[in-house]
Length: 84
Image (tube, rainbow, N blue to C red; front, side):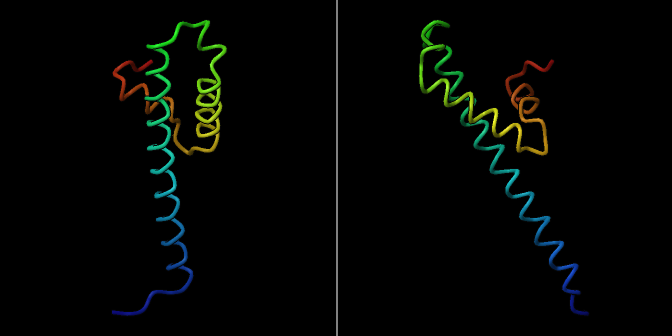
């Protein structure tokens, strides 16, 4: 075996870190989406519009979508069984 070049090792580590970060974002997104769905079932549209937790969830979901390399709303649609 020959040793890896430093550049190749750095690239491999950076790739693994990016994959890990994206996986964490997906997990957080799905958890928040589930919480939002539970609130949508429990609250009326009027209650949701005035509900601080609903607003925070929506903002956080939007932030995660903006930072994601993969369209997270498509992931949610596939999991929910309602693809567009």
